[in-house]
Every structure is written in structure tokens, then in C-alpha cells.
Image (cartoon, rainbow, N blue to C red; front, top):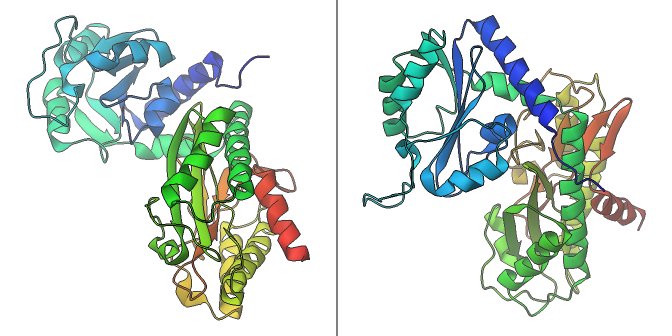
Length: 394
């Protein structure tokens, strides 16, 4: 059976779409930047995800895409890249040490040489769109401007727009990422973690995700008991005690697509105050999901969740909007609030982020992925959905 992944033909379609949008905006080229952390746009356009170093891809209407990498990651780039034209530039070297590092086997080119090559092929390079200006360093931006001698235009919006609605291939990758996270979460909830540290509990769920096929664990937010108030705390050496609330958000990456699963629960003999937090979160989740329908304004979902918190007298513990997009980044557009008129569309993928923090019974959230389909939404996390539905039936 073929492994689920984005096809080469889909990368060609993305390239063609980007070049068409370049024409609409009067751009001669688009430079897509990425690094280990801000990887989403580069991965989307080239499938390359740098490790330690930085990378980019250049798109024009006169030549095939050029993928840029640093020397240590050259083989990784050739292994991953959807495009065969790969160049090594010194500007993308590891930035965590001040020392000059010698790479005797590297065959470097430069931004200036690439710019000259593109001009010789007929690319005017007067206006250059850049995706990732907000992510790159000022020094790198200056090097680029000096080398290309073009007017730079921030075009993040082009990629944000392209990534909003997902293809069948993207949805398949997200489903697989969510399946892995869901399965790993079940392993955690079935484990007896009372008496172990948060770090050890994190090892249980992360190990299970890797066994299921996770490409990477983007993050594992973990806190128990009073540490649930950290909102996005990392697992620590705190011992998990009987009655503790468990806040654990697992973000799993598969083929560049990230699904986050977080099931709110507590261990052992927990208090009535803790149960109330769980009750309200699950009630708010059900209220919001009823509005996950193509054609409906996104604000209806947000307001349905917030109205539950208001009715329960818990609005002061609601710290951010309860829904965001999901895809090549754990959180991406759309990220609606109570005034967002934009409507849901078939093919969008979203993740709930329904949370309450700072209550006496503990803090927690529900994170569950959905794909918008005709007439409603399908969960990407059936274990999480079944848990919430069974809880409401108690």
C-alpha cells in the first residue's frame, strides 16, 4: 500500500498557482523563506524542511523552481525536495555559533550569481515578492536586498490564502496526523501515570506517537495539578498526584501536516471543582461544533463557545479565541473571533482550542481537528470525539 503523502503533481499545481498570482500582482519572482521553526510555507511549496539551518525556494515564470539550502543539510534537501534544482548558499549556515565553519566539500553559489542567472534567462527582477520577511533575520534580509537589487514586497498573504482550503491529498495527510495523535492519546489515558513525573508521562504519549508513524512531535504541552495554569507549559519533573487535572496537548506532524489532539481529563479521585471544569469545556465544545458548517459565519462558532462560558459565569477564565485553522502549521488561518464575518467553506480544516485557565479546579482545553464537508464537519480525532460524547451522557 502506498504511503499517504503529497504527490509531485500537487506541487506542480501549487507552483502554477503561485506563478499565476505573481502575474496578477506584477511580480517577477517570489522568494519563499523557511527554517526549522518557520517551516510551513517552504514545506508547502517545495517539501523541504531545514534542520539546524535555513532554506528557501525561488519561483519565476522563466525557469524552474530553485531550492536553496546550506551545506550540512544538502543531502537532506535532495532527499526531501519536490524540485531537482538545488543550490547551496553560505547565507543559510547554522546561526547558533559565532565561529566561521569550514565546509571543504561544499560547492557554494551566491544570491548574486542566482540573480544574474535569472536576469540572463529573461527575469526582470524589478519586483520580488518575499514570503517570510517576518521570519528571517535583518542581516539575511539585507544580504538578499543587496544581491537581488529588486523592490521587495511582502507577499505572505498569497501563501496564507493558498493554504486555507485543502486538497484531498492535504486532508489525507491531516487525517493521518490526527489518527496518530488520537492513538497516542489513548495510550496515555490508558496508562497509570499517578506517581510518575510529567516528563515520564510525556514520554509515554510521544513514544506512542512515534510508533504510530509520527514524522515529528511539534510540541507536547504538559502540566498537571496546579501546573495546568501555565497554559502552554512544558513537561517538568513534578510528580503526578491522585486527583490531578491533566493538561496535555500533543501536536503531531505527518508529511508536513500538523494535527493537535488534547483531551481534557483528570486522574484518580478528582474534586467536584475539577469535574465542573471538564463539564463546561465539553459542553462548550458541543455548542461550538453545531456551527461548524460551510456557509456559516465563523463568529457563530466563537460566540456559541463564549456564551456557554458566560452562562456558567466563567468568562474571566477564557483567555483566547476557541478555533483556528490547521495544516502545515499547528495554528494557521483562519483564526476567527466573535466579530469574524468570513464563512466556513468546504475543504477548510480547523482545530478547536476551547480553553479555561486559572479555575480552582484546574485548567484545561479541548483541541480537536475537523474538516469542513458538505452540510457540516467531520472530526479528525474520533477518540477525542467519542470521549467528549460519552462524558456528556454520564
